[in-house]
Length: 113
Image 1 (cartoon, rainbow, N blue to C red):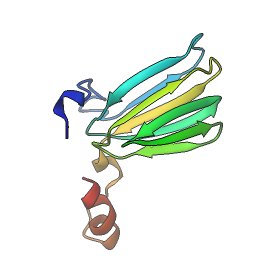
Image 2: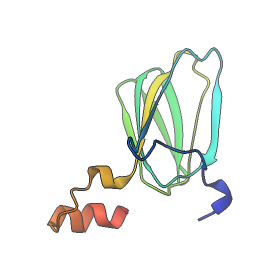
Image 3: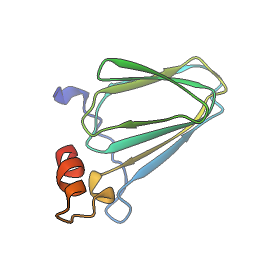
Image 4: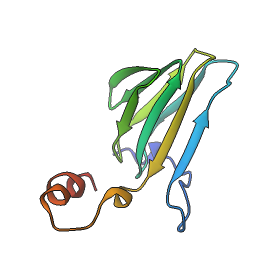
């Protein structure tokens, strides 16, 4: 993992260990450069068109679509659509892990952490 591409921005606090962002009404295209972080990221496109690249694979998202980015995956986002409106939620995997010794925990959540 390229440590120089790690996003050093804090995503939440100890009391609220997640962050959420709403991107809309941008009068021009934008580009978020390639980066990675320890948190899982969910992207939901409410309107418009958003291009996301995850580990070298391009995804073209439109209204109503969701993309989930696992922790430590390299990704970038960009668009030329001034009408794009999307939400992101970043959170540590522990928030969706019940920390119980069941099959779901062992086979899905533990490997992601």
